[in-house]
Image 1 (cartoon, rainbow, N blue to C red):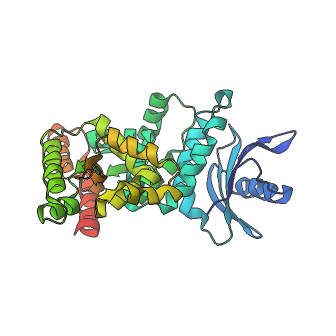
Image 2: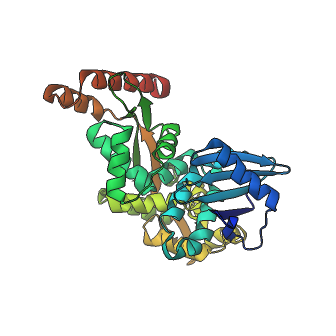
Image 3: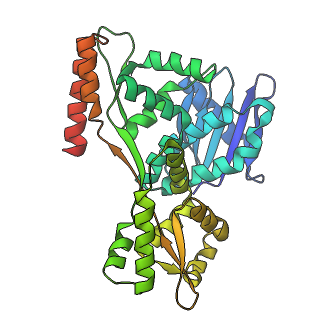
Length: 360
């Protein structure tokens, strides 16, 4: 597990200077600091590096010569720095976009918490986190509409949309490639690589099947089962997915404490005293339960003795799906002549390859 994060800035006169750290008491000696600087200088470009120094591993990111920030995540020697590449790269964008008035300082504890929990996340949670990333969501929406774009087109478009002078498009796209959302390909007639959409993210509420099945099978007391089944049925009869609700359930799923409560309730309804056993793991259990109640993810019923029973009203499903709709989009582009035949054929090829490799 990481034990700290450092933010350096290089100054021609002062050299590498620590401008922020979390926790406040972490230190790194001058030798390690210079090795971070030297490693990135040797690479000669911005980006992520995994650096090993004596009994220390560092996941490090250099923002480039223009801003000259170095963000180092300190790891124990037995940890793999590359496990943190995607989440550190995403976090750097948050830090850089909040440099003015040093706003990032108040955000650092939450950024650090997000980083250290990332490797513990399930695949479903990591996909959800990708969808919550505003820049990646913009790229995904653009490719859902267009199917493909050159890397240079995406870079120029993002710079205009985000009003930022510098965007690490390679790091962003690399993360989306690893997630199985896009593929990069090169065509001789184009000066810039093409980015093709090969996966979409599906996120919605679903009935908690195991609990519903248990209630139907009479696994729980009749008065609880009847009221619970009626509640779930009514909820989903009136449920209509919206972008706002999608964001709510994604934020719930990527909160490790909320996800832990949901995981428990996916297995069985729990009495209040049974849930209270989670207080050693979840500091703000009451706050988490209120949040899940407010967002209609859990329900609380009372037994005949007035005892509170917590049940899952709606579960959350997030997964990457094959974008079948792109076949019609490619056909439209062919009929309208909006993209060259070579681009459309290449897109069909990468879709075919993705389908057989992932879904076949």
